[in-house]
Length: 266
Image (cartoon, rainbow, N blue to C red; front, side):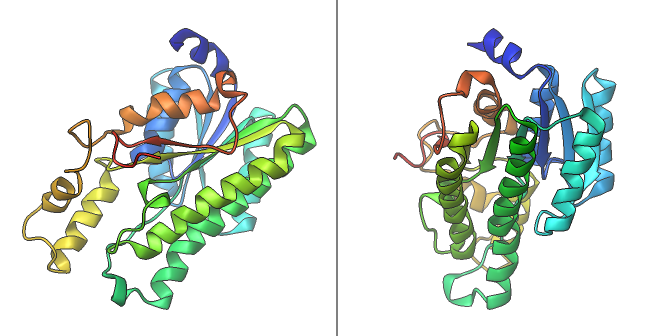
């Protein structure tokens, strides 16, 4: 399948939000390696520029755009900039997200609203605005959202994060049904424990709450149920994400593809 997937993303114009680092950077780099034009969209515009420059220095096609995905105005500007530079939009990855470790009884209204604004509303806005552009230009398109094992199971230290990722799955299914007539497919992928800067943050929060005593203890304990016996890296995710962005996945829509080493079996 490898060579066909490469051919099937070459020349596509792809936005990846939250792609200055972590999973997003891995997704964008893999697509650029296979000939896609990528837009590194991130709240941290400087970090986005560094990631885009690195891709460009390795022969890839990339630009950077600063964006707050919870702002519809920002997302519209992101898409306008993309189309202005590359001529169209073929694939939208709504990947930007935040998390927080917090015992269930301590989650505040503000905690809930902050996570839902980025992880929930951000995916709704990104899906809507990308779809409007794809409908206007014709020819269909692909929208891919970042879910999680937390979109399939509720965990007591991440209740509000889980709620936001369940929302991602729901928005994905609703959008797949709404947009099929326009030949736009909408799917998501569900990572498990990925060794990125986000997990470093969560690991520190476990210690701050007195839930663990030493660095990486939370990561290691949370990873005990991974059937494949190890945490993942962004490169473990990109086989699925590049497939979902490619023509090889044209008959897949409304699905959540779990890429978690076997943590959640559905």
